[in-house]
Image (cartoon, rainbow, N blue to C red; front, side, top):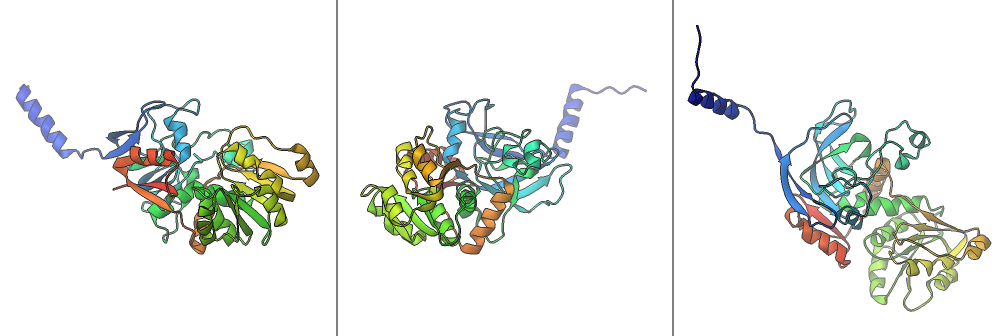
Length: 361
């Protein structure tokens, strides 16, 4: 017996089937269409996590100056469109194959590091930040947190304490980890002089971390108007670099065992190097390009200039736990997700006090 379907019958069957099948979940993202392009909203299907990946529901994402690398196309090899953002706090929504130790609903954070393989030469020597197989950065080589959902390699994910507010704490995943990690690797001990150069998005967190770590914390910035804020954050001393030679002022305090340089002006950074003590280290975390220093002064003091990479997932986790224990907070301006372009423009203007955060609906 043969059965013949009319076009109308087939259409009804297809309609019924479509009604019975669940609609694919949608997500929203702010994409950079190409180098120099404005952020554009895009709706697309929520991706499924692959092997060693977690699907994260984003609750908040900080807006960092490093996002300009993606927006302006300063990093070679970026594939567009790309979703920026690497100061992410959210919850696990789905767990991919071969992932152990994580469950849906867990609070997580993702920073600049995209993860690591765990078996290359760099990883085996505990230099996961320089992994030979997993390279790039969150929001640069893979989509980041300017979105309602994102995928992350499980090796890039940190546990977030329940007591930390997602929106208030998002900048700790970059500005926080960068200053915290530089300070705990600067070589200074409790009671020694540590200067934080700059009282801005990085510096206002660096002062808090330095004071809580037990250093004699010196804030260095231009103008008397920042002194009260610096002292409120925990600075024991304040040096106005517009009114006096900051290097000489540091030497009057006995010299700095470490200077955490957060500024983005090479001449300003050069002006403090002479303030290092014997065996002192200038920890460079502000990007200034070429930097000129007096090599004879470094030789005489056995001093050093050292760059510091922000850190990996375990460093993020340590930063968050330390912040919880000591009440360290980022001062933020908060924007709704839909106003991502305005938030980015505000951050790039340099007028934000002090970090900018996107809040997801």
